Amino acid sequence: MADERRAMWGGRFTADPDALFRAFNDSLPIDWRLVHQDIEGSTAWARALGGAGVLTTDEVGRLVSALVDLDAEVHGSHEPPVDSGAEDVHSWVEQRLIEMLGDLGKKLHTGRSRNDQVAADLRLWTRGAIDERIGEIRGVQRELVRLGQRERSTPMPGYTHLQRAQPILLAHWCLAYVEMLDRDAARLADARTRVNVCPLGSAALAGTTYPIDREKIAAELGFDGITANSLDAVSDRDFVVETLAACALAAVHLSRIAEEMILYATAEFGFFTFDDGVSSGSSIMPQKKNPDALELIRGKCGRIVGDQTALLVTLKGLPLAYNKDLQEDKQPLFDANDRLSMCLRMLARVLSGMEVNREACERAAVGGFANATELADHLVGRGVPFRDAHTQVGLIVRAAIERGVTIEQLPIDAIRAHAPAAGEDVHACLTLASTLARRDVPGGTAPARVSVALESAAKKLDALGDPQTRIQPGEGVPE
Ligand code: ARG
Image (cartoon, rainbow, N blue to C red; front, side, top):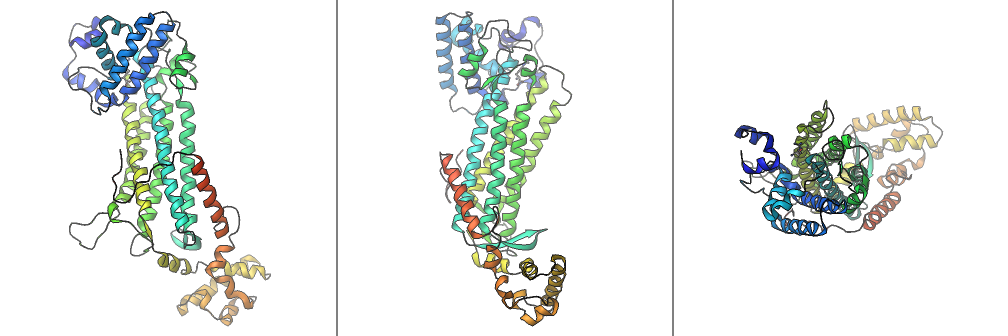
């Protein structure tokens, strides 16, 4: 048997593991991403063992300094060391410590298990990932607010059933997505409260036998508290599911905005144009400029939703406490985070270089009888019951369609033929400006309301601080 495995758990074994089994069982290529967290957790554990009187101050000092060296050694290495023979990142760190310190390295695992260790490492990693995702979400929100500010007075059609419904401001559309993303950030932050509890001290499943100060080690690692039950602590991956759920819903939101943007960039709509830096061409059709960045954002959503499903199904039916099935938790977590991170950064970049064709937006906002509700409201104002007004306006729309004109192009007599109560001023209420201005409720699209909403969104984002550096057209997307 390979020496390093004999050292880890081989005492009871007489034969080597099959090569096939090793390849199947080993998780180092995947969990290598936890190496810094494992070193951080191990450092805190060494100190905790010192506090419990298991290690001397000198031993703790030597372990901690070897862990500092190890951290520097692995800094920036994205690939796991080849041929280390280690089964997973936890065994690898221990193996290196033994190489560095001899017998002292063998003492670090006193009173802990890889079961509480991996749970702690994963919680540390997830906490960091959540903070990064929230930062990236803020980056997209900032771009949406900037776009809204730039297009403060640009109207566009609002749709229901993808049919023109009522005119809105483009800034109002931007702010709708700012709201969605706000909820995504809040969901991630909420998940974080359950991520950020420390399982160390739970050991294999029943709790450690050493007098470890669990509160102290938790505080040292920046956790908000400690887990309450050792059995639960080593088998709980709810915190991963919750994080994945928040990622999945954020991805669904990104997919929705991507779809709208793709649509609005078609010749049929002609509202948006994306810059060359985020578009690609066709190998056969020279005229094509395709919104691949947005299509991929929409497409990657599938994998992210799948990641959440994968973990839920993995957890279903698992008896307490740790089972090796749990090793399958990392791929979906890493995959969803990698993908969502790319999508968020890509979307911010597409938004930052996007052009709006104001004339096309306005033309579409005016067309399509989007002011029909206005006419009905005008009639209601003159005493017509709404249901009757609705019917009368329906007839007027039909008359306009037959003549090939808009409602406001119909002369007053033609309007009155179906709606005798229409006033002399009826045309004034049918203008785009009036249609927009009358949506004057909190949350409505009236320009005054949208201005206030833009201000408050911008202020809120500023207050959150650390404004992300914008990814400008032509720049690469930093890792
Ligand atoms: N590589 C394992 C995982 O990711 C670490 C825990 C192993 N524990 C055990 N009892 N085999 O889940």
